[in-house]
Amino acid sequence: MTDARLAIIVLAAGQGTRMKSSLPKLLHPLAGVPIVSHVLATARALDAAHVVTVVRHERDLLAAVVAEDLPGSTIVDQDEIPGTGRAVEQAVAALPDDFDGDVLVINGDVPLLNAATLASFIASHRKGAAAGTVLSAYPDDATGYGRIIRSVEGAFDRIVEQKDATDAELAVTEINAGVYLFGLAALRVQLAQLTTANAQGEKYLTDVIELLRRAGSEVSAVPVADAWIVAGINDRAQLGDTAQKLNALIVRGWQLAGVTVQDPATTWIDLKAVLAADVTVLPGTQIIGATVVASGAIIGPDTTLRDCEIGEGARVNRTDATLAVIEARASVGPFSYLRPNTVLGADGKIGAFVETKNAQIGAGSKVPHLSYVGDATVGVGSNIGAGTIFANYDGVAKHHSAIGSHVRTGSHNVFVAPITIGDGAYTGAGTVVRKSVPAGALAINVAPQRNMDGWVHVNRPGTAADTAAAASLRPTSSEKTGE
Image (cartoon, rainbow, N blue to C red; front, side, top):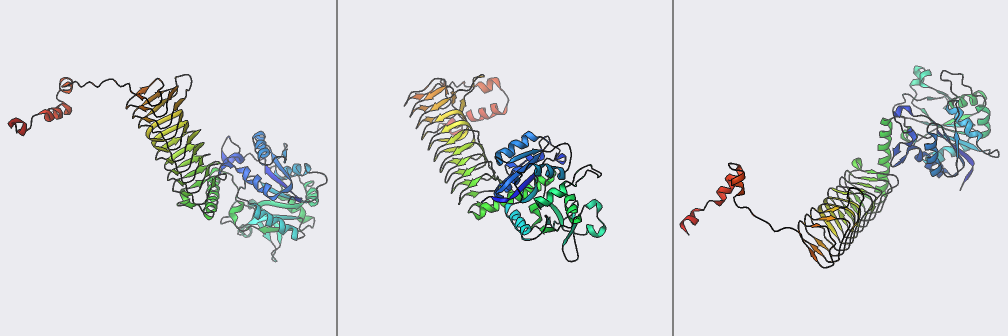
């Protein structure tokens, strides 16, 4: 049910210079989606009456993500006046005139902040009489954070930034987590009092807290259960730390849902992936994007799946696959490379050192080893011999090959597309197939073998090969005696 008394402001206007990247900080991927998408998902889960996202740097890229994640929400462009206070001021101005509830302010770079934590935070604020409430935390290392200073009775007193803190204040371990909840009426009044009269020339949202206190309004601070929940991302190191923490949460969630993950430390599962109960994931596996894995499948070790569909009981071993479909009980690997639009039918096999691309391989068909199958269809129950190449490119365009059902192709074949091999046909070992083969026919074009006796002795005299051949051809003692 929509919380008609709640508006959420997401701050996404920062440049993120410490990432040292041409990509905006909030668009860096985390578990398969942009950092900011995690925050927007949390905002969506709270079902607020209004969500306003403030953007500035690379605004079109960010606005596109916001529009996709939160259709119908409001996007505000921060003007030339810098600072979080100014961002909130503009966001508040975008709220409907008849809204008179609470305003939750969250940063777009806090992806582990979840809806349950914020729901508890909102409930705590509404139980009291505070005009503003600050979310706080107790990290292992408080360096760099503003400290929450409380009275001897434990009530919130003020926020002190590290650069302004005394030694006694620096010893405080409770920090400002950068999440705020205000009554809109009180917030409007204090936003109007903000100035840029400071060293950075910015309007600071934290000044609203001080202004509320000066006005005699009550402000409270509510600690979060675990500091990692409010950890922000400012550089690549923090992105890596957050990725590890989030992945551990995702993996544990699947374990509790009935998935066996043998080595969580080396297993990565994206947020949008879906795994059924009784899936087994072996070490060194990455399940990326919107991959779906059905019950009983065994994935890994050392396997990467990107946006794939894996059927029940399938086995995928030491494989790299993208946009591929592997149907029930099929087997892939080891060392297989499945490129987009590969479909392997039920009970089929793609074996060691096989590459496929735009290939539909029918139920029960096998490509066991050392082959390339590109731009091709293979019917049911067929077997592609070792070392087979589908020559699909003529230097200008790609062409299609169609292999029928219950076909047996010899080792070291080349199929020069476009070509059709009829149902039940056979091809001989070493055949280069340039013309279509009728159903039930045998295609063979290898020239008769010619053995040139004594060639090594004439052309490579004195070599190890010549010596070995001479010894092999020398008559044995029994041959000499005629026994």
